[in-house]
Image 1 (tube, rainbow, N blue to C red):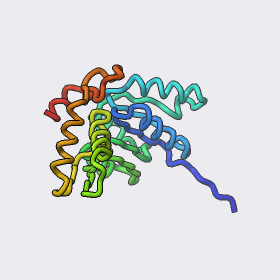
Image 2: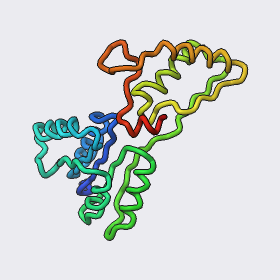
Image 3: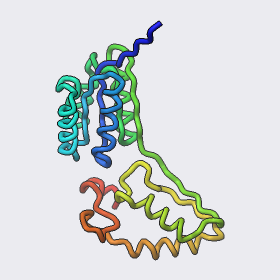
Image 4: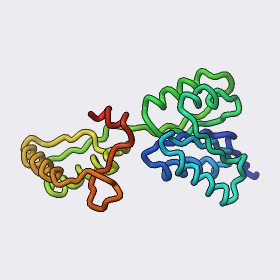
Amino acid sequence: NRLLLEGKGIVLCISPWNFPLAIFTGQVAAALAAGNCVIAKPSTLTPLIASRAIDLFHQAGFPDDVVQLLTASGKTVEDSILQESALRAVMFTGSSSAAASINRHIANRNGPIISLIAETGGQNAMIVDSSALVEQVTRDIAQSAFDSAGQRCSALRILFVQEDVKERVLNTLAGYLDTFKIGDPLDWETDIGPVIDANARAELL
């Protein structure tokens, strides 16, 4: 007996801006490797790197009608592609609210139930007890919380510190963060670059 595996069909891959090449190409490559055609929808904030990546997929031999780039707003996608009866799966990386919205749209459409693979953000925590080496944990906290200006789903959001070492940990952390330089990410002296846009800045403030 021979096992015959087939792809699902057309897969919509929706990727975020914060890893505009790694997550984008990871989704597209996974869907293609499973035998599917792909509509690749990058963030509206990072369309140029996505366009270049799709050019490279085409240069590597994938036909234009097998992998296509879609630069459109989320609203446009919800009102059009998510309603298409030919769509067979959605791969999404981004916010929990956007994933919930996509889920509602594909659940309400006519036709077969399709797969949704959603990777969303979380509340990532670190627990620091009295056995921790304060200098080491300080570096770990800062790296996890502030690499990529904290704009990643794996960034540290909540810090639990044992009461016995709280004062020392927080004082050491505050002193370490005082040495950080915020500025142009192309400058080697910069520790924390800017957030992606004015909306992200407003949310933080």
